[in-house]
Length: 258
Image (cartoon, rainbow, N blue to C red; front, side):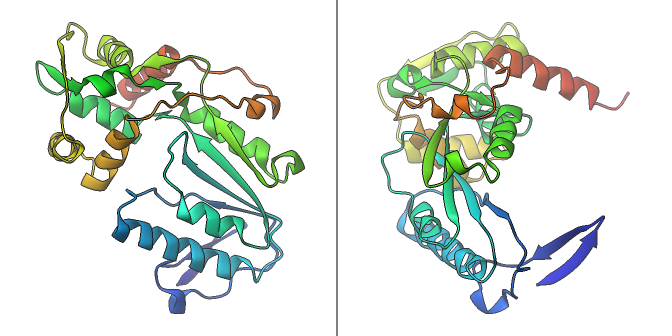
């Protein structure tokens, strides 16, 4: 572990999978955000997630931290072991259960790009019909900010979604309209194994196999907010899916060197 100073902020680098390498956290912590990447819920990866969360909460329990905030997947029936471990710490627990997050470089955008890479986009009927309420990354960050030391969020799991519900197939059409105009061929198959589809997505894009598998596995479940309590925490103007695609498209053009 090494510690650095950056304009009043103390940066601590550590490998949370190695408990012996974790030096004490600063005691005067108010809020901790645990935003470690979510891996697939296979035995091996779930074990690593649990170990990371346990080492983190053990170190955090030695501080004056009042709240720990984390994120998980919305409407996924699989138990999020890391969440249960974090909830067992001494700090108040808040979990934001996210629908599909849309942002420049996000896993969702990488998946859209991978699936629409060739002339014909191939998806399964289950994926095509999946109902999703996508949320723009800046809205997620606003929610995180509004949850900081907000007692109304203590001990709660709050669903985070955008303002509209789409089928995944419609989202692909909208993505193509924004980024690949003229491409409208989407072939819907009765079934395609998640493992094979994940390898295909991994081959076509920067997605790792676990990331691709996790995203595609989640398409077997609807990702729609039944619980809208989060909307009462810091009202804001919500960015629609098409607006988010336009913002990302415009930003990507600005980032291209002249």
